[in-house]
Every structure is written in C-alpha cells, then in structure tokens.
Length: 401
Image (cartoon, rainbow, N blue to C red; front, side, top):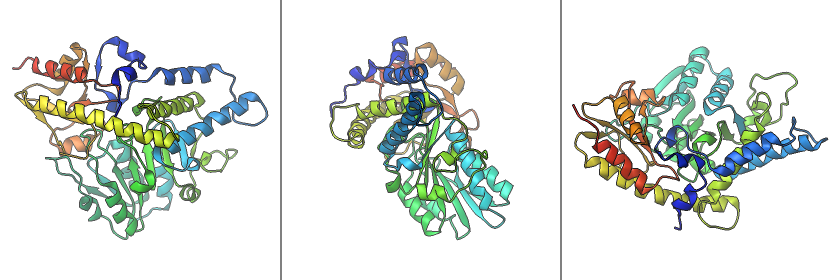
C-alpha cells in the first residue's frame, strides 16, 4: 500500500516540536485541516440550528455532516449517532437511562479488561437499581479476554454486557461478534467501548453486533468530544431525563444542551483526513476501508520492530502481550525502575510515552501492576521507524540501580 508517512506528518503542526509521540492512546495529535475546520466554524456566523437565517442553516449543516461522517466511519446509521462531551459522559447518561428499567434480580456483566468509563457507570447504575454486577476476567499472561469468560456469566437475567473492543492498556482485541452472539441469545444488550479500536481498524458496528458503540474523536485525530452510535429504533425505546422544551426526536433526544458545532466540524475533517491517508476513489466509506488497511500494515510493521527491540533489552518486561489480533499498543516495565521514573527519563529524551494505569485500573490490578501501572507506548498514523528507534534507544540508556 502507498502509505507515505512523511507526507502525512507534514499535516501535523505539533510534530514540529520534535518529540516522538507514543501518547496517542490518551489522545492523538491533530492534523492542520482539523484545526482549520474548528477555527473556521468558530469564526463563521453560526447560531442554534434552524432554517430561517444563514447562521442557523450553517449550524444544521455542520451537525448533519458530522453525523454522516461518523456513519461512514463506523458503517452506522447517521440517524443513530449521538454526540456528547465525552465517551465517559455519554456512557453515564446511557447507564442511567437504561437502569430505569432494572431492578433486583437483574444482572449486568462488566470485564476487568475495560477502561473504567465502561465499568463504573454500569456498576453504579446497577447498585442504584438493586441489580447484580458480574465480573468477567481475562488471562493476565496474554491479556486475552476469551468470549467464554463473558458467555459463562450471561443468563436470562442479564440486561446488559459492557465490553471493550480493544484494551486501551494492552491493545487486546476481544472477539466482539462471538460475545455479541451470546449476549443476544440471552436477550440482553451489548455496549461496546470502541475508543481504542476506532483509531486503528475499520469498524462495522453491525458486523460487530454492538447495540451501542462508543468512541472519542480525539483519539482518531479529531477534537475533544464523544459519540455513541446505535440503531435509531433502539434509541426510540429509551427515554433519558431531559429539559421540557428540548426535542424528543432521535438522536437529539440524548444530546443535552447546544452541541459544540466547531468540534463537530473538526470531527468531520478528521474522518475526511483518515479517508485520505492513501490515494483512493469512490465513497468516503470505501476510501476509509482502503486507508485503514494501509494504516494497519504500517502500524503493525512498527509494532513488530518495537516489540522485538524491547525484548532485546535486558530487564524489560512486556505485559499481557497477545500474539495476534491487537492494536499497536505496548505496555512494559523495567526491572528496578518505577514506571514514573521511566516515563520521566523518556520525556527528557524527547519521547512521549507516559506511565500509569490510564483509567484501566481494574485491568492494571488484574495484571498485578497495581494502581501505578506501567509504561504505555502507542503507535499512531504519524509514527515512524525513527520514532520507534528513539524510544528503544531511550529505554536502553535508562540508568539502572
């Protein structure tokens, strides 16, 4: 595939700072076209959506274009795309709404592989409703969450299962279609956290079997907000608390307050940028599929170099590294050196690879790393082999006790 990483990097002003960025799992750098789209929308005449003035029509167009762009990205229905402040905020909103129909005897399944944003909202909503929470574990050696680990917990009393499409700590990608089959056989709903998967692979929410698919544009080169994609017919059955004058139409029913038009415009620009990572023609969806195929090839090649390089450094331990079906994310520690000290040493070398549990606190504890976690290095569309070599050199030069 014609993946020209040098040409792609020219669109990222932040890279002029000289750092090698492996902090994409916490938030990617942003291409120029996204910043320009955000600024252009902020500086244009805009108002609450309507049809009377040009400013009103501009706002309506921005929202409609963002819904269609997300629909192309996720193979979803634009009429089922809900925007919000963040994935965390939206998941709390949906958990409270869904839990209105829960009660004693009902069950919810969460996993120890997940980010806390796809655990705590469900745990707290279940507690408020008197429902029971059941926990699915994963293999701490490989980081793999077997579908059976979830399926064996699902019963006729299960109302919802929450699971990640890719671990933000380890990169593990569970078999979501297999999990979805077990969930739906029991008549339950599946809420999928796609925050860490969406930047790295083509997504089809229907093929995954996700009833709700949540993700964050700021992880895939866009601005800071969150979104959930679901079937409009499913959303019609849900009734969140909202203001009396606010529309009851789906998906606006779930969007509390005025939408951030400039961020929606930036989201559309980010998706268009992703669609153009490699030359292509046809629909935006087809171009996205071509771009993600090339991106996966690029990122996997760098991942192999990163993993083999870390394996060759004495005292470095990689945690929960699945052999296949993963995102280009590596969690590692160095014997005798605290994760924070490794992070600070790398930062001094111009390598941004932070340390912690990154809100995947249950995952970190299950791995035996506790709350401090370890060092995480994530590869992004703008990562080069030179970046990887800089990280390896910096780790190798780390002072040891």
